[in-house]
Length: 376
Image (cartoon, rainbow, N blue to C red; front, top):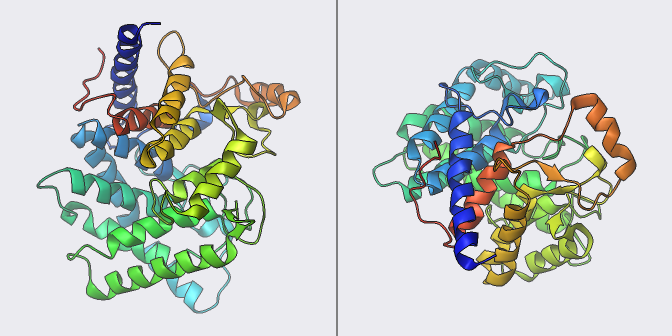
């Protein structure tokens, strides 16, 4: 393929990606995770925050801001519940897993009645991080329209960051996950800097962020690299985000270098697996994690390696330009794949988070120039 045709494919996929995201953003501002996968027709704070960050980078500020407004409404609608949870926690009362705030909601901001692995904390830091990044790149935009939601989210994270919860993949409840703590740290760091937030809350946010970092550095590493959960020894590709974008550890820090090396040696085969024991749809390679690895490479100047990840993602777009959640090139557990197809159907395609991470990596590399207009 010539450089010109590669560029044309890249730009076409970028325009299609923006269109996919816009077409699957509800009037409320919520992004559904995937339109063609029944259990993903809801909006997650985590996925949505990465999607909003990509749209902000792509020059689609209104889309990102609509999502942040939706997040703020989620929190404000649950203000009394947050107050009650905090009061109960401080008094030592037990709180059942299903009583905490949820990870996913309907596009109208309601809780989904189906049974799910809902106690995930990371989204409540990730959306605040994404908001902070958006404010820095958007002149004239302030935290004020989202202030009430940010205050509530920050109070919730300060109170519960140390609680064991599910990880990014909605698994392994009962552990304190390193890649959950990283976005909580990042969100608290943002909140600590906003003068329009109450002074006492800003101070508490900074203190909690410092405690999270100390906890990870003392309990979240083994053999010179970060680990999947505190006190464990497994590696998970989501650990890359502890460097870029969340800054819990600098991308160039030897600890982060060793973590990426551990991911490369066990989880990267062109694309990137989640973790070695993964059996979900056979444990394939996830496009969004390939983009995350490429983002790390770009941040430390490994540009050829970053472009290789971008090219791999481009190669795995469908004929229609859709990006799936994962591909089956190199399955860790091939015998488990059909079980999931029988249960939920084919792999989620398109996955908005995959499209968002593709956009982010391409923009980080300077392969695209915003604004990116949607293909119509």
